[in-house]
Length: 433
Image (tube, rainbow, N blue to C red):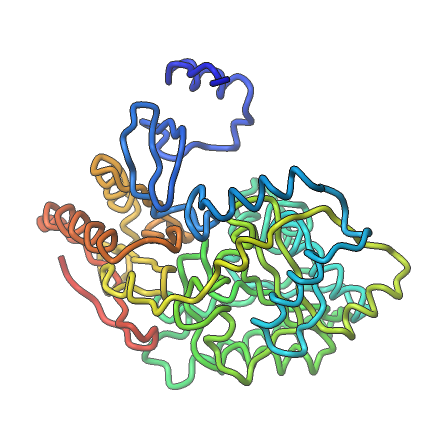
């Protein structure tokens, strides 16, 4: 039986009445009513097709037939928690571990990226016996209370909010807008030294650091690519202080960066985090996520006496994950990013770096008129954020580039610039438009 289709106006009215107002809709001036999706496309109530450049959680594509089939078959058989024996659970963990460094061998399956990061903090607190956490400026790690505390992207928005005394905010390793930029002789060391300074200041106050947590590539913070060697140097400081390194792969894992399966691997084979967290892309948007850590950390958590279990599903999606070669999007505005994780920062002045926030929003709405869905993010909301389903094609990329070029051509009379990066994030240049 097909459910009744409300007129768009009624849907809007009911949403205002029954859905929390803090959950804002995309394109609030003229919201889209999406009724179905397939692959990299979404469709409104009139059958109009939109190219989706937003939904990274539909990792292998909306309504992927293998995922749908596997999910339906499993729901017909069993849906229970992980305290019963089942081959799928251990097979999945085995296949997942095979993509990671050997020491990352123990899995905890959870239901969301927020739950994964919350559990990662609990693991670090239990293993180290310490409490303090170092996070990066503009970071976002989830929406539960423990993660709001370590997400400057969120807690800076709260009126009269006080930063927790056990949370320390390090400089975002941004080579374009940050304290240490492309012309710095050793930005990785400079940014890592900032983390070490925070550790020393915490020690002076009698605090001890349990963990440093970072998105392997900052997403909501503006698609920031850390300089090579940064994570290694930070890990050294954190380990010397008795803490753990948590790599948040919620938005950037499972081959999204193109050349590697995990974004933390971009730093080199000599870097291995102590804990890796994953989000709903693991289940193509379904409520499944994961935390993977070392045997030592897992045993310390077990020895606390508190059990941990959950109810999840997700084998089919993992089988479909594979790194792309990055060719699908290397030419999208020649901007900063890796693989299908790309950002283009718009500024009004390339010297002062005045954010072109209004212009970024204008571009997004004009792309919507061209049936392309894109969002803007970053601390100034001036970074065009590109993270589509991984089935995004070269033809799709060409079309997006063409449409953006047409829009930018129409703004030539405005003093607007966009940040551009060559394929290597260490090679930074600008283009005036």
